[in-house]
Length: 387
Image (cartoon, rainbow, N blue to C red):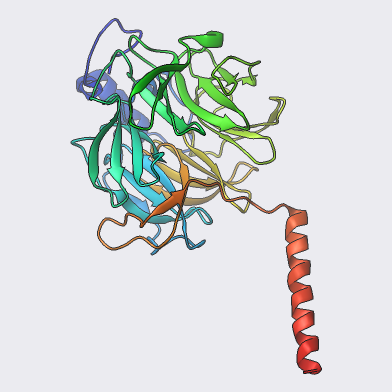
């Protein structure tokens, strides 16, 4: 990975951890009270380059369950402390297995985003430091580099982060460094580079951290230009959605037209919610969390979010409802549907039939459901009386 803005070209970002002064600063940050969650300039620079802060040695979490409460749902969350991919329940947000893809430091360095491949039979994982999209089977076994086809090519991918699939199965990857920086690269279903879906610096885009579908368009957050950009289905710029202060990471479009953003730093640090016009609905930033990365809306209306020390369920009043796991540097959140519970071993699932967001019922929807259940009970009771 090429380090930006420093004038230094280092291929292994982890070498920066040898910098004693930076490591000492990180240690001091961890020693501070959790309530003092304001993100520092040093943390921002490390985050942009995919450098992890030191973490506590032991992860703490709820006891894993056999499978999701919903029976067939998973939320995949990479974590770069142990270079693996975890799986969580999409209904409750609870941990299912910490080793959906087991620790793989040989092939993963800073895994950011894990998504289902277009073939429906493998998982793609973007790696910010290794500068490639890796591919795993559904049991967590490593299959090789998916993109760029042929292996590492920093003229195409460098300092990569979030990604998504187009309806035609092409992979879109955000590129934050190197010769092809400030772009969204596009690959076919075999991992061949097709050029850029979003051109370099289009609409002023500077260091994209994610690309997320929103209806027929796409949202892309620039962490250096502090804007949530919009692009149409061909990658052409549209009017931007909103400015954001100051480090948008994962972006999630909700079914009601609103947008959730994991915002790592700045005056809007936390989970930011925007309405369809780009106006701020709320900034949800509980004390002791901060440095937000991933976002996902649970069916109960609460929000699952990640940061450099774990996975948390928060509400829209800015409270921590539950801490799902700590001591891991958690990244983006991706929902998947599966057909059966995960087998033994590393906990990877059986065949995956496709990504899906599990919708939350509105209050009126819940009232209608309750009414239908009540009507069904009444009908059964009357049938028994006259049977």
